[in-house]
Length: 418
Ligand code: C6P
Image 1 (tube, rainbow, N blue to C red):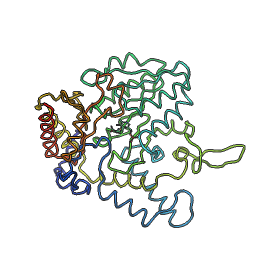
Image 2: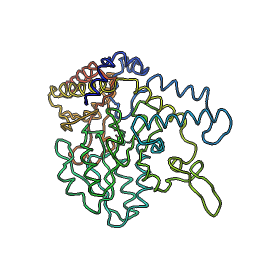
Image 3: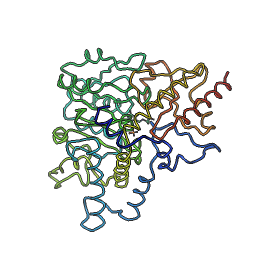
């Protein structure tokens, strides 16, 4: 933390998880007769009441299509949607709101770059560089565009601890590398990648850098002008907002050069059968009626986060992660997958002789929600020689009691199987 951040934290006071939890109605519910312990935040996070109310208010009081009508309601809806875009842009410190393209989520954001930028710029023999810890959303779109353009997909390996091998990255960067696309935080290993350094090296090499921020933005600052990545993708539903909404940040000059990804209403300036003139950035990438309520809901989620003491929340989460890992390490037969020095959000683990799905099913009976499986990272599973993991993933509203409940229930799993 910088000095100004520490001052800000001291000014805004300590972080009280019990107060924060009251903002999330779903956390109060019972599951199988037990209080819910929600540890599946990497899959999707819960929503504060203010977000739920904003969506309700939009449909109850402001519902109309945007960018089209001259009537009062349409103007209100357009204003609310564009205010949300401006708020997102401020939150991620983009240079201007036009650098924020509203998509359906991380997956669509990455597909947009692969098919729009990639189709125009990749040629036979070019290289796209990703890492071995990528989610399928940051693998498959690149495979698809490589197959169409003749570009080659290359992969930076990861260590047994779950860290990107930086010397291998340096060696893989070469004049043919047109773009590097890497996750900021791994959804399986929890690794926080050293992206500032990686972005700088890519730029020195003349390559662009796409950062998959799906698992970083819920846990840490995402400052575009500081990171200096060319593209940044994230999902609203992991950031305490609605599903079906997300963001592609792109540097304006790059977006301006790119062609639209889809054709339809709203992305055009004029259409004749002979020729279409496209709308300007960001609208040329937003064909059709968007998820208006989703955009407004995401703006409200960010408004909620702005009121929170984010730096205290970050410290709380880091402490929770260390606490959770120390509890799991005390359970005989439990092995943590992903032991990077810098971690955030996720603890993946295995238990000797017990399939992760069985762990998940038994935990569910205790009211504990975790995710089990390959987490859409099959190549990473192959790298570690395992078919699946059990994964507990955190948000700032989790408490030490949640992790105590997890450890106790894992003790029961062990008793059942051993
Ligand atoms: N990971 C998980 O449980 P979407 O589905 O578009 O909102 O996000 C895709 C995605 C992209 N990158 C990373 C690093 C991700 O973790 C995810 C989503 C969820 O781990 C669902 S598979």
